[in-house]
Image (cartoon, rainbow, N blue to C red; front, side, top):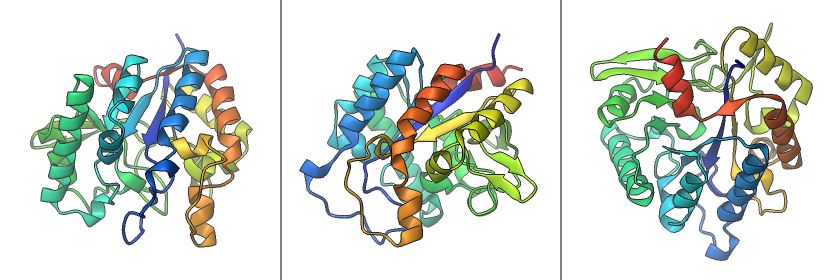
Length: 276
């Protein structure tokens, strides 16, 4: 039986970029998230794959039919928080409020409360936000996918495969995104600019290597990365590169990997791994 991997989608719009002084004021007719998610759903249906969609609560509120359409297609709905603010910029009370508000809304819309969470820009950290993990468990979350093992963000010394985080409320399963190990440090090949920039052969070889060791690979993508005609914020060059380009590579790369590897949802991966 092949090792199952996970494709995850961070459902946010083209203007949700971390670190801005506030959410940009945009006209509703510029929002692109619904048709972009539709493209991803069509690709997944064509390949017969299921995925996990981490929804921003604010996006689900503005587009009340979005979460139900994803769930009806057989995919998992998980939480990306409410406001797209970094967790490191929230108090514990604000974090709990965002979790609960998003969970309540997604449960009303889909009939199922999310059990998975991903922080905007990998902004959970065992050193800086240790209080977040017990809150996640207390609010009913079974897994988190926020600790990216990279030198410049996340948890650079963290494992590359699933592991448990113990809290007073019970253990949480942590499922990191794919990275490629090199002598100079880990590379972000599992999503974002790294997925669009590094050779597809390197990404596939990294996934195959993990699978040979019985470990899943977790990929991630944003709707804007399959929407090359979408608008862009005026950002400094480096931040613009990270947020937007080269976006045109995302769809064919995803398609190639969906054809080559076996995928399921993160909650299914956690069910399998947590019983080992």
